Figure 1 (cartoon, one colour):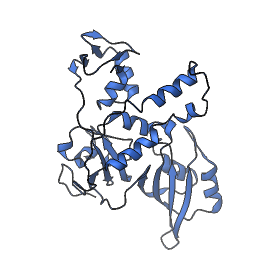
Figure 2 (cartoon, helix red, strand yellow):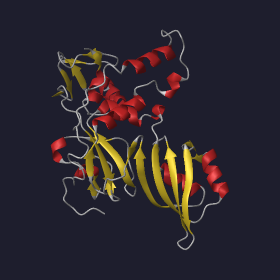
Figure 3 (cartoon, one colour):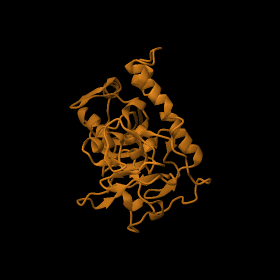
Figure 4 (cartoon, helix red, strand yellow):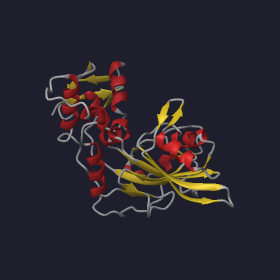
Length: 296
């Protein structure tokens, strides 16, 4: 069945849809030996699609892994300056996979990796407001006014950061530090750290403990496990609906711009890739990755 080229390329796990559009505009994509154009559709089963001269093959099994990333690992597929890469924690048998979003080198906790470009792109898109929960140790003992400031929004250099919720778990006066739990629905660079720097309580330790419905509980640091079929379905349920900007402005006339956007978002339910995950939760549970190095 014909689909937009950028969607086909993203589903193949090569990049996001936005990047695929840039590749098409730059002339890097061909369909049946002809340079493709933006907005063009093709059928991966019958058309010959190439990216930079390499044939795009129909995708095989989809894999979805949860990783408890230790401090010191860079969330990147390639970085010659990084001491450790997230790819070192991915067992080789899963092939090429890419992270869903990022965690800073000095941040630990739950991160997802997959070869399902369709799902990854939607989970990262800010329109879907997928919640991520962080536990953060900060220096000092913040007052009620500091928590209120965070709840009402902190002005950063790239706009207002407004967490979905913030809660003080406990304070340790002897160690002059406080543990908080923070829920964000954005993925801005170093957002948590910048929020607490803005109120004069810098971050000492930062760990992500949940991504959407998924929890890090039971997964040891430096270990990897595949998601269950049920967990993948729960992730899809977060994004198989119109983005907020379409849902809020839906009109009865689907021929207009916002209505068309709404319809496109809804229509992707029938075209999502088949889910191929192990039937048991722990078939490769707590599996160390490729490096064999000790994890910090």
